[in-house]
Image: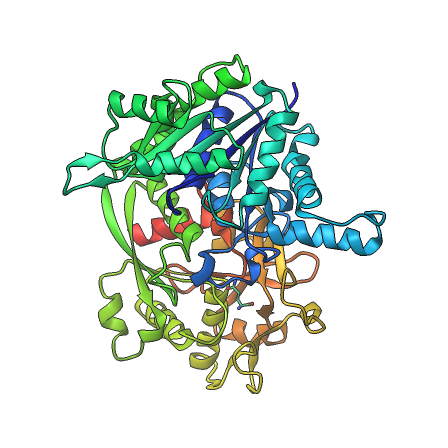
Length: 531
Ligand code: GLN
């Protein structure tokens, strides 16, 4: 079978959850036995979001093959249990970069290089790329931004062209909009959706299904009206009502018939979806035996999406341990010796977040010391692990100015130092140590007990590392290096065997956690917090 292509666009407002809808549809099609992948096309000029700070773009998600991507790829992986790759996230920056590089090579043979057809040809090539591998039956493409934005025009133009180039049953478009409820009028309003579809049609793209985000049920009447005004078949307007969990959305979409409509349109005659594992997860999520408070110590507390994968991994781990994890984001910038006991007194565990730069670092160290001294479960990720090493150097080894050279290049004890291969790097984009690397676990360690095997692979995103020359000193005060890269010896995991649960990891286990296969280390941390 040739690959089928589904495009998901959004209108009226951003943040409607296009990624969740795309991932939910992907989940339903995969649960019907299809080989599905999802890709995201982002309209900004950055080559990737790796250089964007979380205030701009939320979390930067990292794939196995080391791509720094949009956080929606995290949803795709979590919902579908698949691995995405560099090819799954395309930006306008990447498209232009390719075209301009080709132009410099003389590949356009003297032609004037233009948005149509050269940019749109490159967009189409990338839209079809994963389909051409033969590995997938269905490719879902989420188009970032909102219809009507100047920046997303070339993407829509590419879809318009593909609608003509491909057979009708090989391609379809789903448009996500918002149907706002006006409390004063006591009414749901369809006009924004009508305008949004008009904008889409002006670009020549014809939606086959309209999905409406809404806080109240859409009546049959409203749906009929929207189908009529928006030029789609009756019945092809469905609702996505606010839900108690994002993981419930696939079931809501199934109840609305989204996957059935898609299969009908694409001529896919296949079995009903098997959603048993998802349902079992939701059952556990809905009926926790207890609630536990966990502190997430970082500097982006006010941003909803800055620690997306970590918060999702805690949800997965909580369900696996039959508890509801209540995450308390604690601002590390305002944490100090005088208030730490007060701020952490009701917490059952402390997770210190990844990060870059100096702001809030001392607060992270204060939180780590408190957890270490109070015997509170501690889990440090990347910068969180690095700061645990600094904390122990300062307090147990007595090296008062111990630091990471990221923050203090002059320190007399650079316990965390720039990796050798980073020393010659001047370019910032895509040059960190990125993606999955193997890690060998020491038998008879907490890490080994957690993973239950000697060799694991987790994903990375960092420039600094544990300075191996100090390892004997750290061992003398009881800090154990329980995981190392088998090739380079780089210390990837540190732990304190004398503590009930104190572990720091250089990698980001949150990226691989899914509802149906929670990250072992998140699960162990939550289990330790529960006890
Ligand atoms: N800033 C640190 C480094 O580059 C940690 C990075 C992170 O937490 N992802 O090594």
